[in-house]
Length: 219
Length: 224
Image (cartoon, rainbow over all chains, first blue to last red; front, side):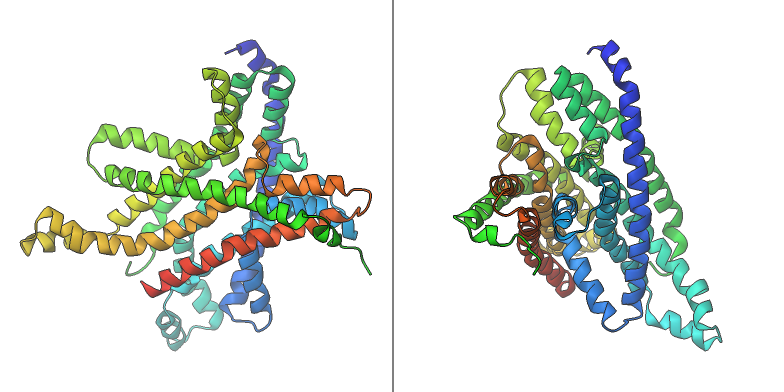
């Protein structure tokens, strides 16, 4: 292990890690928004839109992110839709993550039995109050484990961004291996930086899960 | 009319080459699934043991494999181990090693989850009924655990297939690599090939994964 080399290229990895986190976070935020919209449409069974959402979810869940990115980044410009690599990364992550988030939210909403909503309404609560005080608190606590798993999954998926020449961690490692042939050191830094990014999220996830486990009724 | 670059597919044997590329990806995931299923089941059962040492070791293995992006694992095996140990690995072998390691980790966690999810009173009741340990597992625990396990493991197969798209990055010639070659070769005659070809690859992956996901969902509903 050549520590001089590691120290020299640490800043490069830092920059790459920041880019990874930035695009990952932005993509996840958009994925949550897409997921919320899709879950709402499915929960209220909005006609037409519901079918579109169902098709979108199947398409995005059954294809790899790398293929989606290639299509967005190399394919779409040919029909006049040109996007730069950063936006493309965020868009790809949102497209993939949206369906996973939608499924997580939907499974939370679905486990709340209709009797809960009916009871709330018969107690004189408005639709909004029933949602706010009865349904959502339970649905959220059920969705949290799947939600956190999705966040980790999406952060991991950012590793394929190097394929559309974003200078992320993977790209940096590949570059250093190619240029200096310092394979061990480059891979060591790569693993360390991914652990720095992913471990806290993973720990936070299990903490949240433990805290929220008792929020539901019956289970 | 907008040129979507779909004509390239019909030139020569381009479509057949794409399908062959897809087959490479499917074959690698198939082999990995077949190897990692029994290993995962074994490891999952071991993980329910009370022994602290085996538990700790397996936990570290499991957490490391699951937290690292699969691409990083591919790089470690393909570039890292070959450098450190000096052996030679083809891209295909490296990807099968990684997918077996990863699949085993995921599978063992599913098995452990399925076994743990069987309530304790099921074991106690069978014991109270005078069943032996083997009978308890054979007639009570395994049938219930398997029903929870099968849909989840089928889902793991689709995840495996989707993840094989990454092996492009360690130089295995699979469907995306073939696409790049086709696009490159037809750059002059049909400059819009990238759209048509990548769209086709997108649809091919969908066709490969969708029926499997549907099967998993069907079984999940049926056995609930």
